[in-house]
Image 1 (cartoon, rainbow over the protein chains, first blue to last red):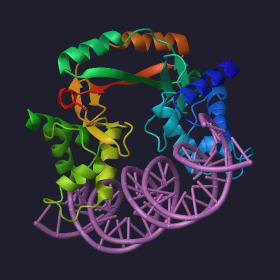
Image 2: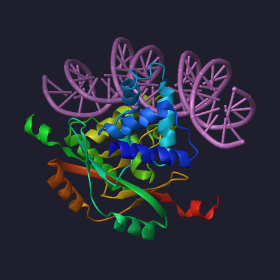
Image 3: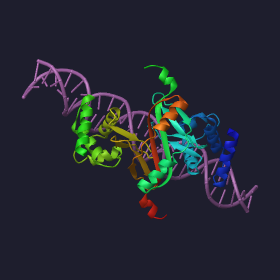
Image 4: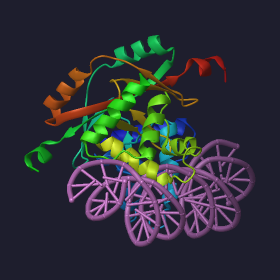
Length: 144
Length: 144
DNA sequence: ACACTATTTATAAACATTACAAAGTAAGAA
DNA sequence: TTCTTACTTTGTAATGTTTATAAATAGTGT
């Protein structure tokens, strides 16, 4: 499953004329396997073992490249640093206000909203994002 | 109209025990009157005339205070800096991928999404955000 | 294996935002 | 009004993320 996704991603890179380097392979693999939404720095740190000489700039550069070919989405919350999410299927995120936990969840169509927005504003809509904020089950238990 | 909103905001500050300083007054006034969604730095620059000695830190401090009492929302897009939006009525934003223009638009209920998310994830939902991305009418005309 | 070009690395720089301590000031009490 | 106290502002330094740059390195097609 993860293997498959990685393979698809590499194919996407090939057909975009983006070279496949060991660093890129590792970053992608990490993004696919880790079910979380890591920051650039977290990716950097978790690959220190395999690539002791890798530069942070490499992580940033490649995340940008992945974004450009549509493999990765950048999530900018209130935090200081961006988080990166492998684009697989369409899904949204629900985020805990207390502990910051991010959970994926699926919801079918907000196409209607996009359509209305096009009509009202005259924009040509390409994309949308949505996040939901609340308190996760764990933080609900631990009474404050 | 704007006058009224400012008054309401000041009342909200009073009842929250937040002192009303000339700087706070000016920042709020600017946020309410400017129909845009300025960055902290833009606010700072636009008040240079009235408050030549005001520090950027003051702008940031007060935007945080306003956020805490619910007068202002912070918008974090892909940009380097946050934008700030006076909370008036519920509305969403549509953002131009090319020029960055932000236009408000209203849409009734995404309560359904919140409800579903609660059921699926077990979170207690408090809030959500959504943005739509596309190409504004002006940028559609100027062919690339 | 070669050559060409994209990529990596290391470092410095840019930028937004926050921390801190000293000086100043709003707001209620006397 | 004046006083007092705690909150704010200011100026500056520090922090942390992200980008720019140039030299060294390494994919990829021939």
